[in-house]
Length: 161
Image (cartoon, rainbow, N blue to C red; front, side, top):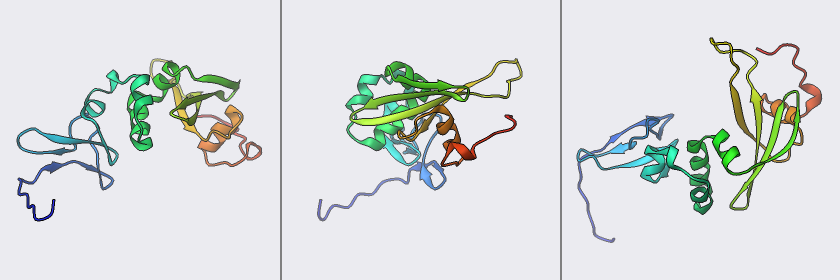
């Protein structure tokens, strides 16, 4: 509004890598009265997405028009939960993992599911879902990509740790 001047107390701002971010779900920009703005890695998100990611549902994610906010919603939901609840399609599996395809709002997504070769202290192996480019055709190619290889010919791990 032209000619409007607003004076307010300086908010407390939580930054990570120079961007507003608060990992614990609280507002990254917070005023003394408790009001605030929620940010996840510099992206302004609705308060419930910041404070209650366990309440996120696929239907809500599909209703988000802004691709950046939608990406954060998927990240906050968790890639594993997103793959499972979105009814992603298993494209292929090999000894390197499983390649999944999902689609949200016309955006085509791909994930590779991998099992950590290093056991946890209790002897179990953690499973991870990593976002990868959609053009990759095999789990091996997807895993190679996560290590910076463009082609599977160059990705030949001798030992996994």
